[in-house]
Image 1 (cartoon, rainbow, N blue to C red):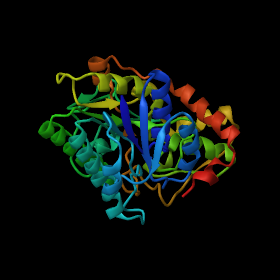
Image 2: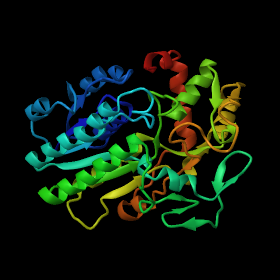
Image 3: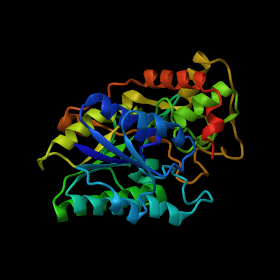
Image 4: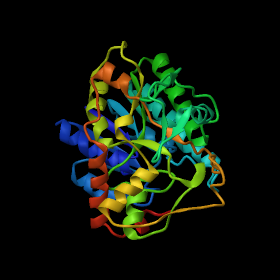
Length: 360
């Protein structure tokens, strides 16, 4: 089995690659990465030493893609992962070119090779307005849904694959949602298997943490380095909640999806830590204070005059319900949230200059 894995030197791509090699012998992995994300270069030689054939290049380069040796499956981890991409001064055209048209180029390879396709998608395909409209309650440490509350595609356990994907979902989210649709259409039209995994917040050691992407890593590294941290929006209380997933935990499912050639299992599933692996910023701060020592997460009055956020695409609560993955594939994430946080902290201790390395 030969797998083309794009974005192989990124956080998710590199962890998934190493875990794939640990779980199955005989895999040949051809990797592609443009090394545009600072920090990704640190994974290049380690992955090559593990036996991966890595080409430095871009999924937008059709000539390069057409020159690659044929593979049996493509796992697409290449993306600009920032929810603020295109509205933070970066190019909206580059975002669409990379996240959408890059995926189209890979789907053309699947068509030519009759290869299977896995897209690592995101919780950000779900409607911001619908998420913001959920009946939230404030507890002392987090926003939460009432235990008895539920509606179409949502409950306290999280949002399901049936939750609304109506705009707005952010430019980033829309590129991933359009990629999902096109992947399904290509698979149906040309007869190759397609798997779409909508991932919650990925986290673990070695993540290139930034405030808008990789918040768990960014917060722990910043806390330990004594850098100023701020709660933005929603009253400035840090009650916003996300679930957390270690990327290595998706590998057993990826292998099941590659091996399965039937059509009766769902092609779109949520992969996430779910409610059990969820945490608010306030709760993360309390964990940091206990494990690292006192620090101050500073409220910003200019940003926090109400319970609403003034930043684009902010949402108070996003927990994915992974029940369908459990029912269809027997999948449950084995890595508990405390272990993920401890792993990040250990990395922060051994890499004190990590934020300087990966910033930008």
